[in-house]
Amino acid sequence: MVSAVALNVERVGIWMFDSDRQAIVSDVIYTRSEASFSRQRQRLEARTFPSYFRALKERRCIVAGDARTHAITRELKDAYLVPNGIGAILDAPVFVGGDVVGVVCHEHVGAPREFEQHEVDFASSVADMVALVEEQSARLALEIELRQQDGLRAQLAKLEAVGRLARAAAHDFNNVLSTAMMAVDPLVSHADKRVAEQAQLVIEATELGARIARELLVLGRDAPGVSVEVRIDELAQRLLPLLRSRYGSARRFTFEGRAKSCSVRADPAQLERVLLNLCSNAAEAIETEGTIEVLVREPDEHEAQGRGWLVLEVRDDGIGMSDHVQAHLFEPYFTTKPHGTGVGLASVYGVVRQLGGRITVDSELGEGTRFSVLLPAWV
Image (cartoon, rainbow, N blue to C red; front, side):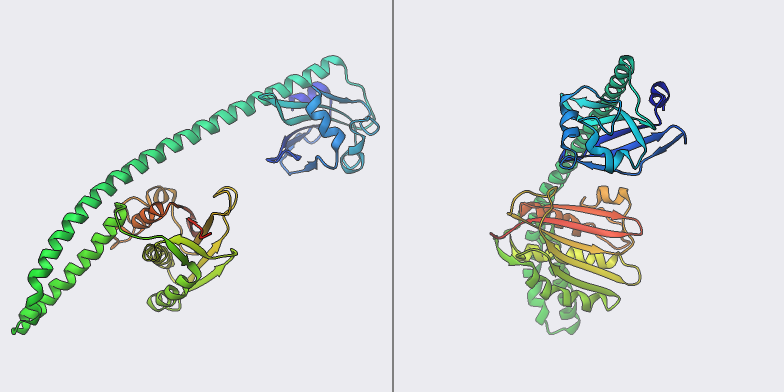
């Protein structure tokens, strides 16, 4: 707004290069006669306007008193200048760290006009101010990222400590359970029916304790396992019918393979535990009826590089999770369920880490949840 008044131009816009630096995209455009700001995105491609983009990198300012005939800006005539009624432009590239990252465009609507040197200097100063704002914004973003990484490292350290405790407790617990089962086993065939029934109850309880101990061993990363080729599509074909039977027709389970291959390198029992836990959580997040989608796809550029990875996704359209729940989701014994143990997702986290993978969650209250598990592909 200040620039528009100072330079007596109708429009002032800030345009920034996109991520691959092959185009500039309008960030905000101020129109003086309407006293309004517009954030409607416009895009100019470097391949379409090569002279203009080359000048952005080579010149401190682009001064075009007659923009429609100027050697640098005339290529913008049909696509941009005429549709917006622009007769003259004074554009100042924004430099950060020696590289041009954008441009501040001062656009005169109407007949051509000449810009004086003090106006050119003013436009350059405005671009320098925008550069300072960009640098400060980048610093703040980096500081936030560093704080998040520090928090993540602290959380991982806590999980490692709890995992070591779980491993030690699980070993001792298994010894106690083995002794109890050996002592009670003969009583299952006792002549007194009441004694035999009670002995069977003890056996079942100790077997349940053994299963919990195995979960703790996974959490402590001390579970035995061997990495072989596991086809997730075949695993899903075995498990999804069981889940459909358990949760009924109100929960619809589907599978889709979007990758060339659905084979990963894993311990079959551990991967089965991951899929069962994620699908069970998804089913329980649906209050009445809904869909649980299981799919295998190639990772995007933000998840992994190269062909050595696949992503297993489990999506639901359930109640979703708050930011607070997502922040503590994989912590041992953290649960939002009235009768939950808080071990299931913690064990999933342990298994995925043991397989050399990574798990992330994306959820919003009322919009459902998506778990994404990055796994080593079988190549």
